[in-house]
Length: 516
Image (cartoon, rainbow, N blue to C red; front, top):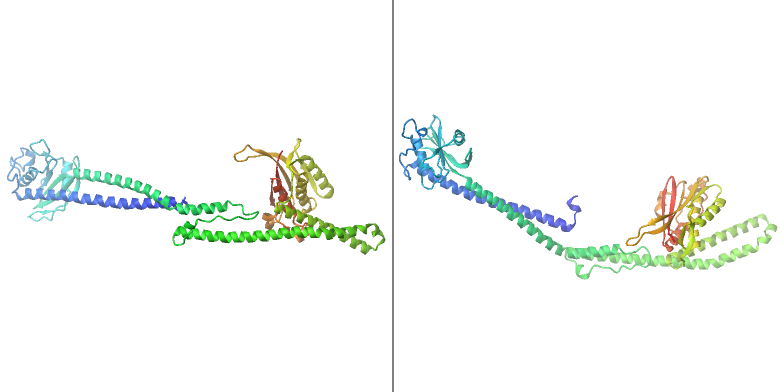
């Protein structure tokens, strides 16, 4: 997951924590380096002072000093000048436990270390002497040039701060223990890291509280937007009264700009919805009024056409054909007007219904038998369980819905198409309640399928396929495009649902109605 996918509050807290961690790490590192520089400077000053006293010969302990250790003399009981200078270094007051020196006059290196509780220095191991003599020294002048101070790890003794001198071919290395400085630096590092981590955590927690409070206004704007998205605006009169509070919609701040923009957008959306609702209501009233007004003249036309039926055998063939066309056209017009009026009532919520018990099994048997008679060129099969399937609704409305879908499966497919009708009881889980039973009625065919460009709107008004293509394929066609819109409205009226799936290999409609 990328940082961009995180919530804004989480991103701000994480980024603030990272910045604090970087700043704390920088401050901690600078503090540690400052302490190290101070401690090492003190140690170097101490080493410089002691080596200066030892080499000048005027400090405490000046003069020949015997170690009583033959290994430290040049060949007799008296120590060599180089070893004598080293002993003056080791016996200075304040040198402390662990100070050491190594001397190499060309005949092999010697090394001594002062230890607490011993009256004389102890000889160093060859490995320790080699490590000390590897330190770079001065340029070989007779006056004795010193190398820069550096840190060396002496085997068996740990870290030392040392300085080397070259006295005419004799190399002398002086050193003091660096362990106390390293220990202090280690404690400083752990203390600094602990303080930085605790500080970052505490500051991040405080920043989280502050950021949470500062984003409260933005969350209020988001809450308003979520409430708007939860509104049912697709049907009925839209009520879009929700707005971002005025105190959060004052331009000039980021939240105020967003709140003001959201309110302006909601104003535009509300105006558009109201305009759409007015247009829809006008269309519904027009459909209802036109249907009512057209019923009378259509009934008149059909009545006069019916009066001519007893005399049509005596009339010329052209007149008889014309009267037949008038009669069939009036019947089609009457059916279309009735569909428009029913659809207007459904959309306006003024169509009455009832909660009767409808025997779906017997109804499907009846409708499939009728479809066999009307569509002899189609193969229609039925599959229902032996027990009766009953739903809550009005029998005529259930009949109308199933008839519309089954008729479409036969009328809009070519001869030889197989249609299959089946019904079964399924369980429908309801949130917070016990599962309820529903009756699922599936009507499928293996025809050419519904054209892809209208599959998403087959339940809208006046949606029809390509009539010219249908006729070329031998399909009957000729629908008004209102059937599925009426079926959807009737199913909704009975608290059910209707769904469609279609491919080039066929179409399936599923009706789901509440069972008794």
